[in-house]
Image (cartoon, rainbow, N blue to C red):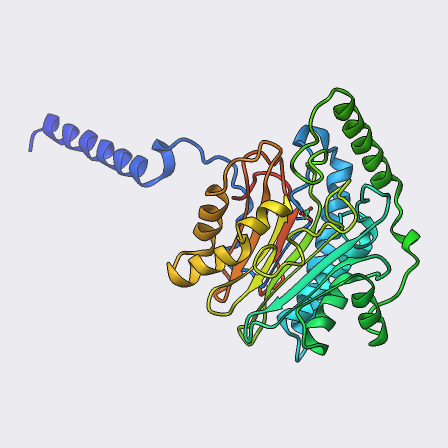
Length: 362
Ligand code: ASP
C-alpha cells in the first residue's frame, strides 16, 4: 500500500471513532433540566387541609411552613397508627384528622370558622370500605374532636348520623371524646373572618342586592380537613371534619358529615374525602359519584375524580377539591380551576412524605 492511502485510512478511522464517541455520549443532547422531586405513585395515607389556600403570592413562605408542618405531623401520626400490629385504616384516618383538628390552623376542631350568630358548629364523618359502615355528627359545639364522635356513632350505635346535643351526649357518655367549653373554639383569625363577612353582607343588603344564594359565599377559603387510608389488610377508610362555612346560618349542615357527598369508602372502589362548597357537593353526591365511576366504569381514581369535578358547572368563587385512594394505593388530588390551592400530602408504604399547596401535582 502506498503512503497516501495509508494516511487517508488513518484519518478515516480517527473520524469514525470520534463520531461513535459523540453519538454514544450525551454530546448531541441539550443538558437535562434540573429534576423535580419524584411524585410517588402509590400511597397508604393521603390527607387534605382544605381547598382554602389563598393565591400563591399572598401566602408567605413562613405561613406555608406552618401549614406543611401540621400536614407532616398528621401524616406521621396516621402512619404510626398504620404501623401498629393491628393498626387499621380507620385508626390512621382518625389519628391524622385529630392532629389537624387540634392544630387550630385548619377549619376543623380548634380552628373552626364561625356561624352568622358567632358560634362554632362542627361536622365530621367517617366510613370504612369493607362493610361500608359509616358514622357522622353534625352541629356539635362542645366536642374537642368531632372525628372521634363520628367513629363512635359508626361503631357503637345503630345510626349513621347524629346531630347537636344528642350527638354530644352520646359521644360523651361513651367517654370517647373530650368535652370542651365552646370558647375553646374561639380564635381571633376566624372571628375577624366572620366580621369581614358580616360587613360584606351588610353592604350588599344596603345596596339593595339580594343576598348570595350560596351559604357562606362571602368566604371562598375552604379549610376542611380529610384523610383517606389503606391498611395492610387491604381495607380502605375515609374521614372528613369541618367547621363548615364562615357566616353559615345556625343549623346549616354541609357535605362533610354527609356520607356519599363529602366522604365515602368502598373496598370495591376507593376512599374519598372532599372540601369545598358543601351545598354543591351534596347536590352532586360527589364522593359517591367518584367511587361509582371507579367501580362501574373501571376508571382510575385520578380519572374518576377529574371527570366528576370537571362535570360540575363552574363556580366562580371556587368549587373545591377532592382526595381519593384505591386498594392498589393509587391516589388522586384534584381541585377546580377557580380554586387557588389545596393543602395536601401523602405518605407511602415506606414512610416517604410528600406535601403540596399549589399546582405542583395534579
Ligand atoms: N365542605 C365544607 C362545608 O361546606 C367546607 C369546606 O370544605 O371547607 O361545610
